[in-house]
Amino acid sequence: MLGNLLAISCAMVWSLSIILMKKSGARIHPLALNLGKNVIGLVLLLLTAWIVDGGVQVPPARETSLLLLSGFLGIGVADGLVLRAMQHLHASHVGILECLFAPFVIILSVLFLGEKPTLTMFVGGAFIVASLLFVKPTPSSDDPKDPPGKSRGVLLMAMGLFLIALGIILVKPLFDSTSLISLVTIRMTAGVVGSALIFAMVGDRRARFREFFTAPHKAILLSGCVLSAYLSIILWVAGYKYLQASVAALLNQTSTIFTLIFAIIFLQEKLTRSKVIAICLAMSGAALITLAS
Image (cartoon, rainbow, N blue to C red):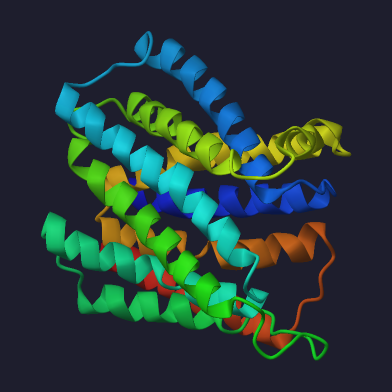
């Protein structure tokens, strides 16, 4: 039950962070925002590791290498690929492609961790995935039917989601031998390096990164960054520590529904019949998965 609570809490915190960053009104280059929030997350994680573990507890060389590889691929490179992909896709395409994450985790967990998802879990997962079809916007009539670079965007998004899934699968066997906070901190260290390398390819980097410091409503933006790159990532990894990877991935997918709920509460978005159906489907799916795990 603890793992279920952590995974669902992660989805809620992540969704709230998205709403806060949107509510801040900041207009920041996505790769600059990604690097900035990851740096903030790393500073807070280092402080937490010092308080909880007396400093970062570095495991043996093999485990450390896996953690660094996981963070570099799953945070640094993957986030860059996903953000690049969004430049070539409509919101509706992004919503559909996001549903690839849970299947990627399930496939990798079966192949490398020997997990065996149950029929009830698959049914619950189907409910959650089906709920997303009711909340994702479709392109407006003014948009081209197929945006430029759509195929490139699809490929980049799929690659990014696969690397995020691979990143967490790589470290799951290390949970018993490595402190949770130290594990997350080492991953984020590599993630910051990966984010910086991706951002280095952006033109006019100084001006782009300066946007992070000149954005309006800095307190709201900072709160969103702390929730996304610090609290939610701790909850995310902790969920995988106490659950099968496939179960955690399916419960994390409810973040889309929580984003919908928070948008209605904080951004005054309209509550429609399709959104009510989506919420009911997602809650039913999460309940089934919780009962099955």
